Length: 183
Image (tube, rainbow, N blue to C red; front, side, top):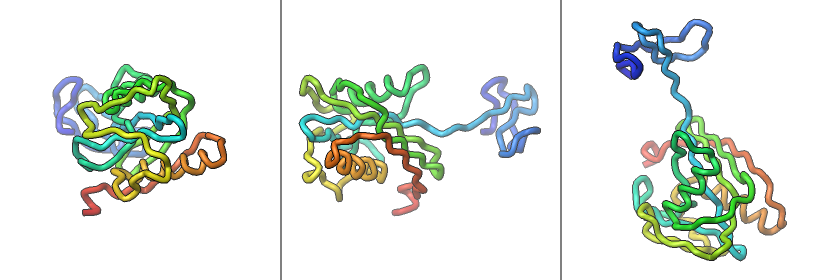
């Protein structure tokens, strides 16, 4: 950050007094500009033991399958963001059940929060960020065409939980190498 979003003056990067991390500080007004992780909210939508996946129509990972999820907006609860993203990507309005998976990826400063949800009306479609949407049985999931490790991790947990019939909260810590560094 070069300029303060509060007053427009130049900022410098240093550890503020009483803190332990470098921050962008405004030399004029004294504002400390914190950078915090992004929250990705979405749903693991089930119907008749099938999971709803979306084929991405946007980068990154265009053309690969994912769960309906995206960045949380200011002024939303996590649940509202999860439902909004599910509507935007899959034109579905599922009934939320419980927070199902929380994945922390500190290397890219993201936290995924996915709810278990159920289609009650059987309705879904293709939103503007999806090429296609489809319900998959666990044994039909295109595992080699999944967009992100977080999707794979979540679907593996779902597979285990469907076998036992017990859905519990899963907390995953992942040290993710960004896609651009893997290519």
